[in-house]
Amino acid sequence: MVQATFDETLTKSVAAWGAIASMALCVAVLIASEFMPVSLLTPIAGDLGMSEGQAGQAISISGLFAVLTSLSIAGLTRNIDRKILLSSFSLLLIVSGLIVTFAPNHAALMTGRALLGVAIGGFWSMSTAVVMRLLPERDVPKGLAMLNAGNAIAATISAPLGSFLGDYVGWRGAFFLVVPLALLALIWQWLNIPSLPPRRRRARGNVFRLLGRRQVALGMTAILLLFMGQFALFTYLRPFLESVSGYSVTALSVVLLLMGLAGVAGTWSISRVLSTHLYPAVIFIPLVMAAIALLLIAFGSTKLPIAGLLIAWGFFGTAAPVGWGTWLSRVLRDDAEAGGGLQVAVIQFAITIGAAGGGLLFDWAGWWSSFAFAAVLLLGSAVAGAAAWVDWEHAK
Image 1 (cartoon, rainbow, N blue to C red):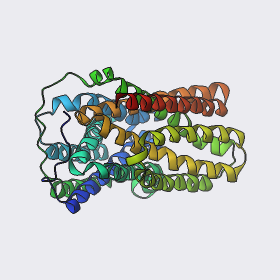
Image 2 (tube, one colour):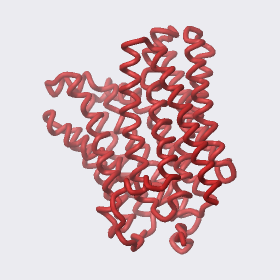
Image 3 (cartoon, helix red, strand yellow):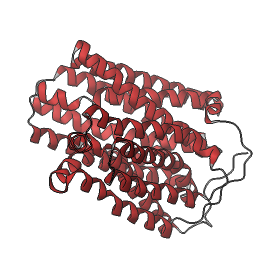
Image 4 (cartoon, rainbow, N blue to C red):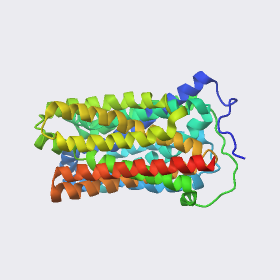
């Protein structure tokens, strides 16, 4: 018998949504912190006396530690109150921001970024399980949509905001401005999230054991292919828009902003259909994204259609994680924390491999090849999602 997740004695409805909002703020600050170095590599490298390639490691090391943390966090913290755990990750975000702000050298910068990776991996891994305990099942998609809306906003504005702030207050000032926001998120969480004592369950090995369930293996395969395909294309949008479509820097920034806003709309829209059409949604989304990738190849040098296609990409691409987060809350209700850790690790790994594979093709055969590669991966995600649906119906 699967134990129910939501406990109505924990918190009232209004307070629960306040808790979800505090988590959304923390997610936004985490993601903004993760991607802010993208636009600040040159001043960081110049100030600390290293190459831009070395400065770029500040991004990869946070991803590495996010993966390591997500794979181990459920087992290492099984006896800790989840409120204290989430607050600890928020505190770690503050410490990371301070270390990076005052970093005197490369080693200190990497240390701060590694701590950020721990905070990202831990917070994201626990987020779905905590939402499941704060909200009744019918409201879980809306709660996950709120978290992903914060993610979408932060991912959209982090790079341009970092560049803007860097011009006025320097790269150290840009990173320091993260600290008060993280402190606000920490206080908000502490006041709104109720005590969430750990569920007393017998330890059942590492998170990879979950892949022994066919439904989990198929779902994680779909997630892997989805994010590989998404970032095989998304990572190289700027050179595509500048060199192929002929966008100016200003026009490019406007399109990326519209993509982010469309992503926020997408997260809210999909939350309304997941309660009754979960599997059709997670199958339909990568099919649409694959079609968009192919249409981008067809209309590569035509500005207006490209803008419309990218806005649609932002709408569907940002909605996809809400769908798979809802899937996790249903398929792994009995082990959501370990499942969340596995999902975060799969996503981080997929982003790394997808971006690397897309880059190799971009340099070797041209921009269109990485877009075609993305379309193939996204079609594979839809196929894996359909297989997961068939398995789910068969199990019922």
